[in-house]
Length: 107
Image (cartoon, rainbow, N blue to C red; front, top):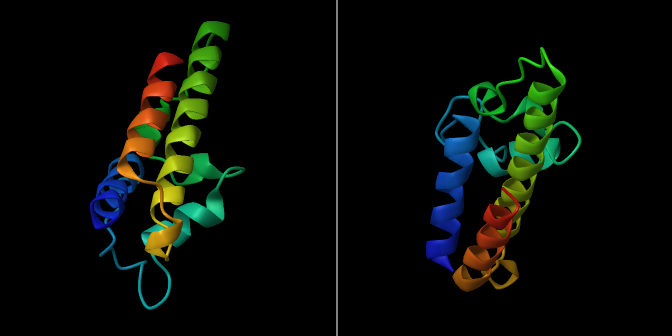
């Protein structure tokens, strides 16, 4: 369970470009909580803008940006599920891998 938690915090770091030790995360406010509060409606506010690359100049670019955002939302959902406070509520690593594979198949 600790492996899953550590892996997911790393994923959240990569997709948000924030570290759990950033100044904005102090006391009870954490990287996970920041992502959870944005999920799913304003998730693009916490995802690294370079990953979204929302130039949206053409219909194709808008479609690609929407697809990227949908994939990132699915990944973040797994991340939030795996980083729950109680280890018993977290996904097992096999479930994480299966979920990520399903997401990969959608690309």
